[in-house]
Length: 373
Image (cartoon, rainbow, N blue to C red; front, side, top):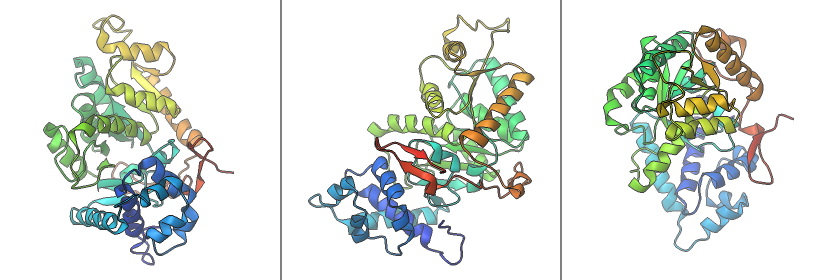
């Protein structure tokens, strides 16, 4: 596996990431094509020291060949723009992760799709923490969720969980703040590049605290590249989907039957990631079944798609579900040294002993899956 920290291959990661960025710059080449090229061509990619246009053509991907043969397309110009992005990332102290690197989030590889590149500001180790939970929900939580959500994030972060969320106002902010209250780490998945102003701007100070305390800001969007207004809505959906992809389970504090939270929950259910929601049915100060603000919570509970959270026993039960998912569904096992690492202080160097790009295969229908045979 290529690793930029290996003194024998100091430029290998940059070279491969630049190659991937060059592919992204080609007209008509999207993430699915890039992932297919990386997976099907991984042996050739790992065995070469020259990732240029001639090499790209030897990979034989039809969609890639069509893009390269388009009139007016210049590989050199695309590669030059890719190099400028890499230079900007380096100037801003950002990490650029590709799926061949040991620092790329292992959990993400268990999705049918995952970002070909990630740009990270902060501690990349927080993306591969031994335990991680996504905490999400409405931008307008009730007072009950404000109290319970922040406190639950504080409890789990105090136990060593990295809290993953999307830096949105409301429940996302509660999750991040609760983790910081405990002196723990938290990861924010952004819908914008990590080197500019965050969205929403009101959480810029929170974003800085996340980085300063050993967490990370992560985005699939290249630094210095403006986001077109027409693309922003789809970026928010993608951000919602990548949050559960970085975690062992997803907890929704409050959600209606519509809204961005449901993008994340549907994605989690699709990948069989454990889901839990706050259950207020035993409370007398909340109209749990009649208030539309809790409609999503009720629907996920009644369908059996989510575990209820309303007390210590239910929290412990959901933690067991997350542990089982991590160990069996993801086949991620942690080395003895990793399990003894001080995850709460951020000093541990925990890395999964299994799950890497070499185990990913592309089915005939184009879907990606892991094969450990």
